[in-house]
Length: 594
Image (cartoon, rainbow, N blue to C red; front, top):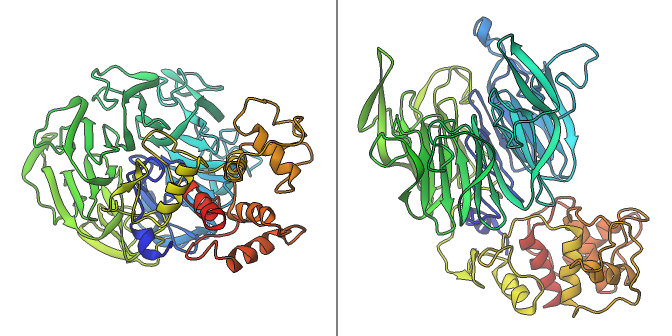
């Protein structure tokens, strides 16, 4: 049953449910709800009711509240500071913050963006405000960018998003050297910040990869995990942060390693969790941010520790959550961002007068932590398993959200009522069905075993099931068709313009479903092969398979009522129009058909 305990123990380590952390040092994963995100100067969190709250610096409109927020009066450079969380929008399932722009995906899978658009980082086809007739680069309220988006990650002045079909799209600045977007250095416009150089920018989304399950945009580099678990990176590499064994920049994705479950990109260093729970780091180590006891850079991955569930890279520091929910930190502690009272086991001089306290190896600071996000501006935020939000570190722009401006070197509670649905630690129970991301303690474990044994569906790879990955209409029909014994449709001619390949895995399934009245198309001639399936849709499919109508204008309510009456949704926590992940699609099929 999907009760709160199950949510608090859901798997972060799998490719389908990786670190619920930030942009500029975090990861967005296919099907994953990222509820905690920080940038250099502000922070955000999604509460349990789906409302998005933000706080911190807002001079670029990145808080998305227009002019309605009450700001602190801190002088000319701080006149747009919000020191306490303010509500931005409702019905949000994932969020990501860049340096001066922000993004959120709503429960209908639509992508909304706001903030600075000088370099086209909002992806709206222009470099200004979409709602202004005169040029204004700042968009102070959210504007819709695209549909059918699974995850999003905001970098310094660029953005990347994964669509429901696993394709990766990028936009924004390509950087002075043309390496940020991973598209070979091109763009659809050229801008000249000054007379000395020009920069290519991409003002509309551009596809660069397929079969992607996770993406992370850092300040100077980016990373993507493909569905086969391979890690690919591109961007600046002067500190070795691409992990390729050299310091040569790359404007296209290059493969780094295999069997990767999660990745986090800091400005100058990178960290990844492999599918066995081991943590690997590489890049800059000047302030001991790699955590291996030295301050020597590494251009190749170095193993640091085992049993890691989540990781987040800050500017010069790193934080991980271990499988037992304990939070460990290391690196620079210049502004108290490690949360251990400003202590460290090393010092490092930066500049003539600046002696920085550092921690060269991991040190534990908290227990019962289920999400962490290290801002690239030297502060940290974490969510505990009781749903409380804690922050610490530098606070010159209200980024700690505690109602004041002033650095804090130990964790302080900011708010409560945070959703745990995307925040978790790794379960300790054994895995099942040969999948590293399905454990005996998971509410859907028995359903996954049934699905594999009956041939309804295998994994997304030989060892991963990806329980939180998005399910398309084509996939859902194929699952249902296989569960029915893979019957042949009466007709071999498809009525849908997007279902024409007779060799496609879903071809017979779609035709059979249409003939049986289980579902028609999303239009008179289009089935919507790659459209994500919502909870009410999969329940309606099952209801119709069982002989219930679940039709007409109230089909959604009828499907939900039928599912509740038949026990299909007992213990599940969901909203009708939210995308239904692989775990819950299989769970509902199993409850009805097994």
